[in-house]
Amino acid sequence: MEIEGININDNDLIFVPLGGSNEIGMNMNLYHFSGKWIIVDLGISFGDDTMPGVDVLVPDPSFIEAQRENLLGIVVTHGHEDHIGAIPYLWERLGCPIFSTPFTASLIRRKLVEKGILERVKLVEINPSSKFNVGPFKLELISLTHSIPEPNGLVVECGEQVIWHTGDWKLDPDPQVGQPGDMEALKRLASRGVTAMVSDSTNAHMAGTTGSEGALLSSLETLFSQYRKKIGVACFASNVARLRSIAMAAKKNERHVALVGRSLWRMYEVAKENGYLLDVPDFISEKDVGFLPDDKVVIICTGSQGEPRAALSRIADDSHPEISLAGGDVVIFSSRQIPGNEKAISRVQNKLLDRGVKIITEQDHHVHVSGHPAHDEVVFMYQTIKPDIAIPVHGEKKHLRANASIAKSCQIPQILMPDNGNIIRICSGRAEVIADVKADALVVDGKQLIPLASQTIKDRNKLLHNGSIFSSIVLGSNGSCDGPPVVT
Image (cartoon, rainbow, N blue to C red; front, side, top):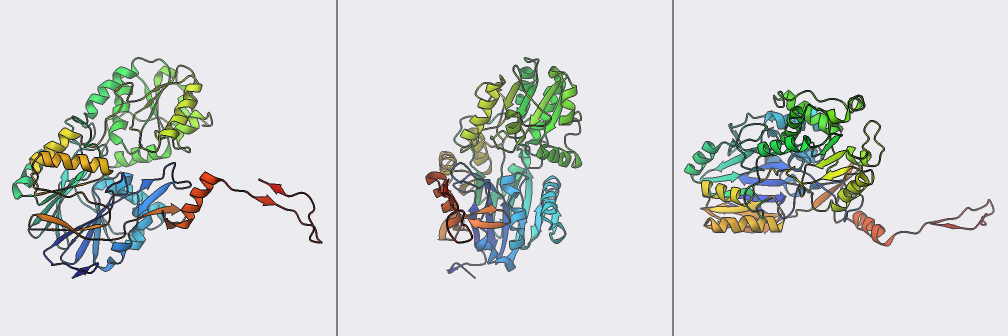
């Protein structure tokens, strides 16, 4: 068959990243074999200060949309927004089944209900550590560790080619939620011979290891014990492991925990539905906080990235209807600072400081661990799997280069750093870029999707930097001006 004018043999495996390579977020990867396609993950990214009026970005699916009749499904590695967030925006253009583990399926199901398309979508639940076939693709989930329940690496076997697609992962002997990664399954995979490892690069540039969530729990227990006023903790709602760590640290210090933010309650409900967080004391409502002494409450809130409509921003503005903070209270930022959000985060922190609130970040105390592998963990994975080819994804250029450097030090025979849109042929233990396809970002603009490079977005940028002038003129019935024009 032909792809973009290139003849492809049925036994050739094709890999096409449409999002997530040389960028953080919008993960979308395609695999082709024997005339059929699958998508691995379908995520979003978020706008920054350089994108006025842009909140959510999704990958452009035009290339695979044109192959829709041969698209067999979307296989999801885990439930973070950069891996599932684009599903409600793009599914109608793809129209294929979705395969995921039960926890992730619960998150996807809620998104489909909100979009009003649940009844039309075939959502197939796959148990963790399962093997299943999708057309000519022989697939296997291998349980790993991340900051959300049921993270999986995906084995993609096509004829003689075996791909290890890691998804998001880390090494953690005490992950707080779920079990440590399945090391025996990784060893079995390595014994089969792995053609290529398509792997998470997010923290490859960081020395050592990421650190354990269990060690963070101990750190939070100690930190909480040092304060006698309200303690607020800002974190990502999707970090279920962190919810448990905060809750157990609060329990140790005889504090109740309030969840402030709808996304936190939604994640908590999904976790309990699927058998997670069952040992955590019940969370209380934000309405209950005012009835408790300050030294008996911990407030978990959304808004760690300075999002203007999130709970923490409203608390900092003193516009939240139930929660207020004052001198002597503490706010802990238990998350990393995503590049591009520095100004927004600083604005929130400065407003809190003006109110006499103490700010604690990961620069001040051990209050955060990442869900992604640092240098030594990436080394471990390469030395365990021993692939013929290293294909770093899931990161900006500096992250991919760091991953590639590690692969070189581990003597991986071939290293290929992809760009979004590369068509990569994997055959006989070698990979090569044979063509390129369009791989742009789309902006969610109300109910429509528009290209990030569109004139609409360019015009908004001009308005941001150059401003605009409006003139208002009131005309009388005879067509003459009834007053001086008003220029704004």
